[in-house]
Length: 147
Picture (cartoon, rainbow, N blue to C red):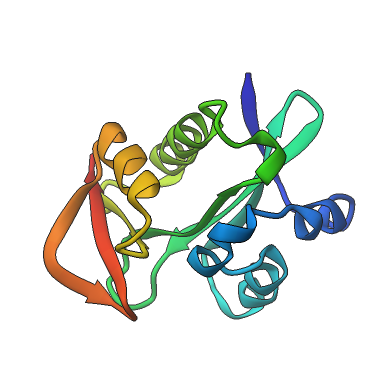
């Protein structure tokens, strides 16, 4: 069963060693970039996605300063662990984590992905994210989950 753990001084090196497949590199920023970005984001959380004691993925999410709603900025599963259903389960863990910490005023979780990333689109749709027609940010399709 998967679970989330906060990225700390004890596990950050493992987080930055995770890699997506070569054909996916264009779809997601590196975890090192995400951890650097965390220094400039208030109300954001960097979490390792764990299968028992092994970190198999990474997520970065929090309250966006522009719309004051939750956004998932990064979500990745290491190439060695893809194709096992972990992505869908990990997204659900993030949704549950946000649900447990959010205030009543927060009604949505938003994310974006490369329009050519059909796999991500299908996974997010299965969980309940809906594309916002015509909303493209920095070349990425925006999709939203409503509580």
